[in-house]
Length: 83
Length: 170
Image 1: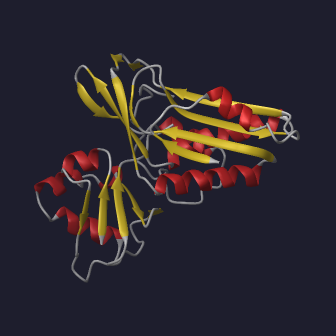
Image 2 (image 1 turned 180 degrees about the vertical axis):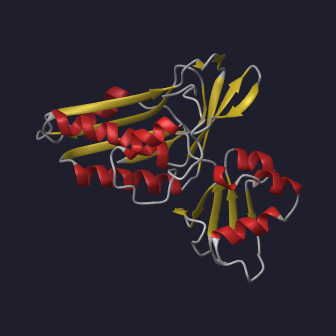
């Protein structure tokens, strides 16, 4: 699974992009975020407030209950501020 | 048509091109977003726009298609820049062409409202106190929501109500 981080998610984790292999029981966006929180202090801090987070799976906005799988591209970012 | 690019654009040439070969166009509405030199009370040296290549184009295309579904448009154009921009520089151009003005005005406003809450761009402002990511504004969500028909779980569930209307761009 490919993870992408944008804006302050990128600043806080120090990572723009990484390939991860979550445990098989991680099947939804919510479970993926919960697993990421356990990966170290910078993840725990960046993902502390999930309400401040938006997630896209394969470049489509996703809800916490939406499925994620090994081949997916999952992006984590704050609410958008373009225009 | 949509374009996501680092470089500036020529407003006159872009707008003229919308009606050059189409004389059914009776009016063109244009919005240009610029970098302001202030965010609230604080001076801005510059801002950097981060974006999600791929998803950005996909969302802008979808927003444009939605506008064409809702209004009788002859043409539409969205150009959004990324990278580092200084005060006075252009960020975004939205132009809509139609036989009559009402469709052009409404569609242009719709496109700006929706792109601000759906297209994956993020602004980082350079202030004297340091660089700071702009917080999404509840007023932008409200502006986007008035058009109805939110088709995707985008920004709306956000806890952004305390965000102030103070970033250095429109």
